[in-house]
Length: 250
Image (tube, rainbow, N blue to C red; front, side, top):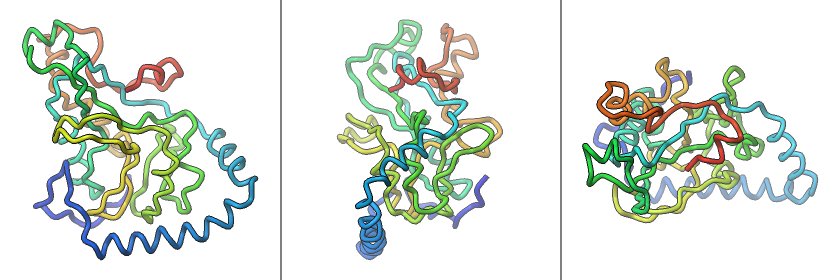
């Protein structure tokens, strides 16, 4: 597990950190601008893109991925809050790596609707642990890594220089409306955290013996395991990464 970073300010909202001060943004723009200038010369060589693609394609698959069933989601935001607070507790960015999107067209399964009929229309979404990790090959440091045992694609925040290349290369977005604030979101699933000046993405709670905290703490999962809700699968679950599985990911 990565060594803890500095202690976070307890006054920060773990789900929605405040905007970065102007001077912090200026420093980031300076770093990004400098890296962009250096990278421009390299990008001019047409073989670089093909080489990066080959490097990404040659990486091992992630053994697991977090899978959501929106028809079992009640939009309680427990996954976002627990994700945020656990990562902050071990010195990482407090940004939630999973987000709940409002999806009114999704109906609850009757087993859940019997308890919470007014809580339909939500979809959890997080990093898909892509078969080809496009975010990896252009990282100029060792910030983006693949766990050799599990294939987990994760960010070692101590080595992240906030250059933004992973965000640019990430092929998957959150598109829709955030359940928490009602605001529209259209962003990559690798996200910049101005509070800690690093990028963050789902890392499957690397280093946590119990696995992803969103799966463990989901109240619907708890109800299913206790027998209150009848379902042959969980609302949030950690499943093997397969081509068939990726096709149904939100």
